[in-house]
Amino acid sequence: MSALETNDDPRIPTIQSRIRVVPNFPKPGIRFQDITTLLLDPKAFKDTIDLFIERYQCKNITVVAEARGFIFGPPIALAIGAKFVPMRKPNKLPGKVFRQEYDLEYGSDCLEMHVGAVEPGDRALVVDDLIATGGTLHAAMNLLERSGAEVVECSCVIEIPDLKGRDKLNGKPLYVLVESR
Image (cartoon, rainbow, N blue to C red):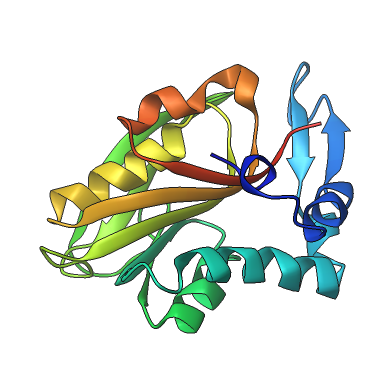
């Protein structure tokens, strides 16, 4: 499900127009969806955060988790009264961690999350800027579920539907604001 499918929110076209597409980056054949241009527009950036907050403020989410960038997750977590759990690349978190390796559109990677950051019974939202092949979201879901959390939904600013990342989400709902151009 996407914001485009559920309503005609006037904020969506502006958000989409602020995402720059960079061909052949980081390697030939990839059409990189660059959100840095969205972040340069304070109103479009705020509208992006607000759309997520409006969706999740009444869903009893106790954990918002985001991998690597931490751009969208922290303000969403603060606004809905949930804790924020960062998921990082290897050796960036001190202490004991859960580790999950996964495949990307153009390589492989690994996520780590602090042991004890999530408790059994937590209701988790996984946030990311983009879903392509679904590897990052799938790895994040695995880390949360290994800790006993229930993943309620995954949420992304952008989806590249042709790469079928939704197929890796084990039937979990996915909320997307815009599809790639």
